[in-house]
Image (tube, rainbow, N blue to C red; front, side, top):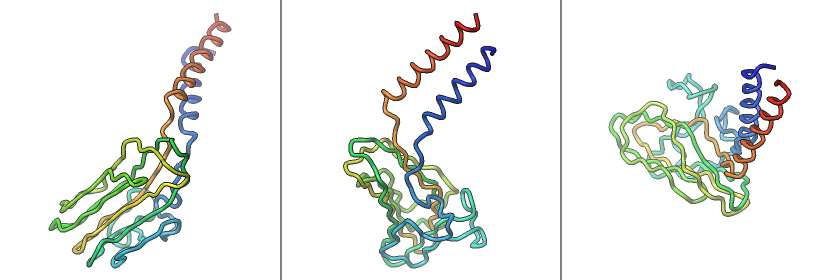
Length: 188
């Protein structure tokens, strides 16, 4: 086995170990064609899950959610199972087609708001990510607030993933070096 093949195997094993955690969000891209797994509350006028026949192309997949509450805030929530004391990162893709900037939205995880937009101009799908947020209980709320009377906010590909602990990353690196050293001795 040559050195390039060995390094490739180590890289694949390390990336597999790091990606072992799956997204905790149920129906993250609304691919059921519904809000299944989510709680949609408040002003739900002009709020739905749709495909591109609505006139807007989803970030990925076939469906996306759109929000255009007209009289008060609309909310979208999902409780995800978390481990108290563990840090998590929430991310999603958001678009706004409001030409007059009369809107607001916010995103939070476990009660920590990490994004607030007020009177945002129109923008294409943009990726938003929280910093690490610690879970304080066995359930943590993924929460969005929307208000956009003349137009829509579009949401797709919501994710919540645990942050690998530094000790885990160190163990992966140590194991990779050990594997390289063992295989290198065999090759010499």
